[in-house]
Length: 304
Image 1 (cartoon, rainbow, N blue to C red):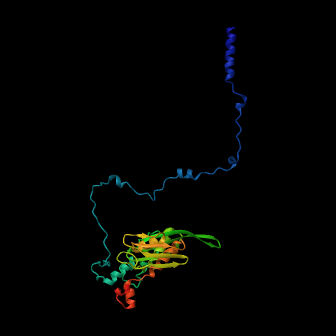
Image 2 (cartoon, one colour):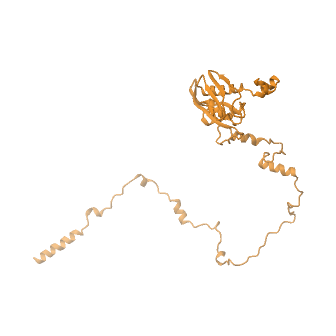
C-alpha cells in the first residue's frame, strides 16, 4: 500500500508539469494596417549612428592651460599708408548765431524763442494752447480775475423739440458786479450746468452798466423799469435801511454795491425778465450834476 501511494503521488506531480498540447504551437500574430506598411529607417537612427561633425567646433584646448593673471601685449593693427586722420571738431570754424538758432529751431520749433530763422510760423503753439483749453477739453480753465464777482440767479432745464426727439439743455442766468457801481446780467445755454454758467458769465461781462449812487449808497431818485411782462419799481432809502427787495432785483442791487434801496416786482415772476427790468430802471437814473450840466445851471438851482 505504501508503494502504491508513492507511485500515485509521483504521477500526480508529473501531471502538473506536463505541457499543454496548445503550447507546442506558436501563437498566431495579429495583423494590423500599420504592420503591413514597409518599415523605413528613422532619421534619428542615422543621426545617432553618425559621428558628430567637427567643422564648426571651436578649439578650447588652450583655455585649460591659460593663466588669467598673465599680461598679454597689445598690438593694434597698423593704419594703411594712404590713411589721413579726420579733422578735429575744435579745429573747424565757429558756428554763427544764425546757424545755432536754425539748428535749435529744427529740434524744438520756433515758438520757444519767438523768432523764426527758417521762416516758420511762430504762433503755432498758440493754436495748440487754444485747442487744449477749448470746449470739450479736460483742462480746467482758470477763473477770470477782473474784480467782478459772479452770482447765479437761476438754472433751468430747457428742451428743444426736433425731428429726432427732444434736445435737453441747461439755461443759466448770472449777475456779475464789482460792488462799486458796475453790474451786468447775462444768460447762457449748454449741455452741462458748468458750461452754461461760464457762458452766461461771459455774456454778463459784455453787458456791464454803471449804476448811479449817492454817498449813502442809494439811488439819487426813484425810477421804474419794465422788460416784457416784468415791471420793477426802485426807490431810494435812508442810511441803515438795507436792500429791501426780493428775487433777482435784490441780487442785481447787491452786486452793484447798493446798500440802501427799496425794490418791488409788479409784473411777472420771471427771474431773467425782472433782472433785465432792474437794469432798465437803473439806466434811467441820472446824477444831479449831470442834470445841472445839461441845463447849464449850478446844482443849487435844482431845488429852487
